[in-house]
Length: 421
Image 1: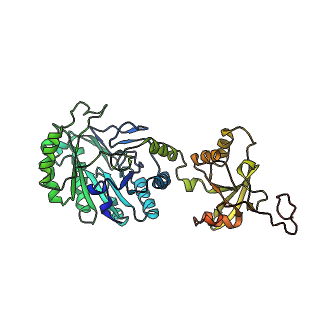
Image 2 (image 1 turned 135 degrees about the vertical axis):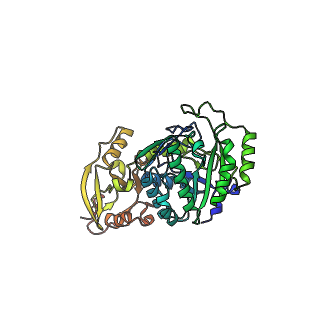
Image 3 (image 1 turned 180 degrees about the vertical axis):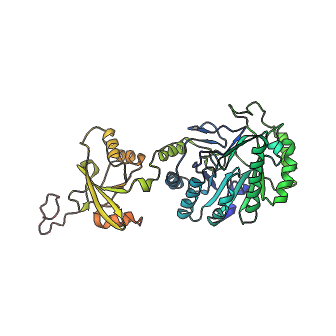
């Protein structure tokens, strides 16, 4: 993998390569006075906002679909909408799954640093190449004005104590990270009258720590927060801040304050198409593979995949356990007619099946089944040949439907499409 292809860390890559943030981390362990997390929102572009929250299994299914539409995405990141390590189990499972499937994908996380330290060794093993920690102050007296509370190791802290706990954990995490090959960036939200006078101290601290890069982000007032009435810093103040900070550590200047579900090139937040995809995958079972253990088949005689979905009167339900594939049951198909409701009924009947094998089907039932998380596969062949390949996740292309079966007209053929008697 080429770390130069990270559009957030390399300004030259931002017009060629995209990133996607997987919104798998809803909970947060601190309350910033400028943050108000929102869900089901497509109108705001800032951290803490997401149109949906996905599980690790849903996020990988979403990622596979997204990459088919946006193949220039080079980076998968986790940045919320809460904090990745307040949801460490979900964050780490997602990173493991992505690394297992997409070996050359760049991985990154953005965190407040409170709870990342125990996971740094595994993050390095997973080759998470870029890690961002938000440091808005290094003095507890300044930090106490930025955070309402901090929750750490089942205790809730406020005031100076909260600030001390957060800053101590950030220091521990950065100290460990800079000793690895990980690129370490620090985000600093510049809040007029709160920490803008503190930039030189932060810069000197980052220099001493050996941090690779800093991103001084302009504070943005958000309704229903303690800082909603503070004015956003003007361009002159931000230019002065960045000039000061650049004397200590390399500065990032093209940050777009991305959403927790951003996808595509920098500047692309969450389009209506991406939002629709997120909604679709958020409605799938928590773990599509785990909670959809079965495969359904439409067949005339129970030996071949050889029947059109519209003609189906029953579904053969198969499962695989310990390498053995068996027919679990037969489920009655709904009666013909009823328009879209018929296919919605089929989706309900097969809601624990990950795939449906048919000889053919129309586009409408295919789209309805897909929207319900069931992959419709048009193919022809022996059921006993196809299912082992499908359950093992191997290449099925030779079974995909190309032309209609032809009757062998051989001995024992009835001519009625019922197979040899």
